[in-house]
Image (cartoon, rainbow over all chains, first blue to last red; front, side):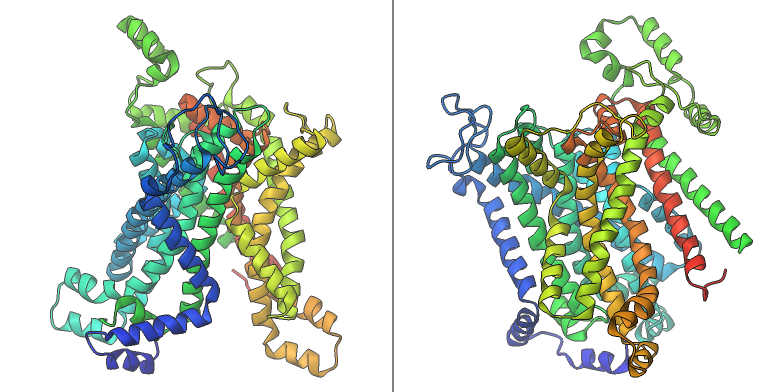
Length: 309
Length: 317
């Protein structure tokens, strides 16, 4: 970071006034209309997931043998499946599972990776060397295949899927945040902390960690989309969250048990995955564009609420 | 150069040994008894303990873990990869039989991604913020978000619905019937290739934009060179290096993605075999196939690194 941007950061008052945050959000919105669209859609999907029981027209698990394999009509906007369950309700409840898994996995994996990365970057030395090798080994697996193997090993319930996806996220968090921590370590205020005898733990948590918040948020948003796709793929392959809990992936797997699958059983769950991933990707891209190629101090301030270092 | 080559190879070997250890540990600590998976819960309950012990010993699962691991390494070196629990066929035969079709899909996907992605990236970079650029960027954003297996399902469904067409479902090797083989691999290859192509076009766009700003390109312009010559002959070669790197990284995405995409298209490739083995908890098959996928990924990325020296005369190790 250049000296003047550090100065700009220093000028910010400790407690941010509401108006300046609003102003910067508006600035961000004007520069990245697509990111805002993504944020709005993503937010809407989160709301749908939270309020699924209120929004869903029917019970997603209730079979209705009088109405099996019905194409979309006025009674069931997205049609019904082989046992007459309402596809729209299942897609809505599917959002719950998918988002819960994706958010938990990213929270768990990216956070673990980031903390590990801070330790690697700040401590350096042999710890860093060994950690780098371990992360390299983890990244040698294609994502989906590692997730499949892990979820096979620890069972196919919801927690297993979350842990499996989280583990695949760790090295990404680790590598990016490590590089941030490496550059922060050389900054003067960190050196000052060291000189005044602060412990490594204290410097890492109070001085290095806050600098990693913005890149962490970028990473987390970007990886949400990846996590959703992996979750869906696991469900589709029959090694994800098991039925009857509806997930977008296992709905697709269900659909193709028919020799000639009904189009609405394939189209709607997949469209839900696509729209959700698109929304989070657009948001992530927007945030990254704002931060790249240089971490802009304005945005860092916005993300960390003005309190830095 | 030779020294670098050696070091890089040793490094990759170390990574792969780490990979094999992780696979081994992950698959051996699984809570379920492998016999339960093989015999089913009821069959397992009805069996005498002595018989159980005999089967475990036959499968080599009752030895100490270190011995089991070393035996696996020995098997890898000798090329005898053990047998499936459920079928008589050896893992080596499985790989030799199903591998070629998955390899074809991956290679063809690579070709598709460059054919689609590179021209799109060039068109975007030549007139940044023009309408072609806008279209290319939107399309690439969409293709990055669309899950390949879903796109695959839609294509299969559309072909079936409108043309009553279905690709052959048993393995047809290219040397047996090239046309049928082509029908089998083209679908998955296009789906995987489009998603990669989206990344390629993004990457080539931004690299090309960076290179076009450089002095030597301005010099070429000043000398009055044709714009086409400037972009294709002067700028492009220098912009390609990062694109090649990302192509190597994307291979991980193709290898993982192909597992789901093969399932969507019903292609009986290696990915399908892996999924079946995982569902059946066929440890021997799973450990070897996962290692194979990781090994391919690692080796290709070493090759990408090495291609740098060959493509860029400034880089000498």
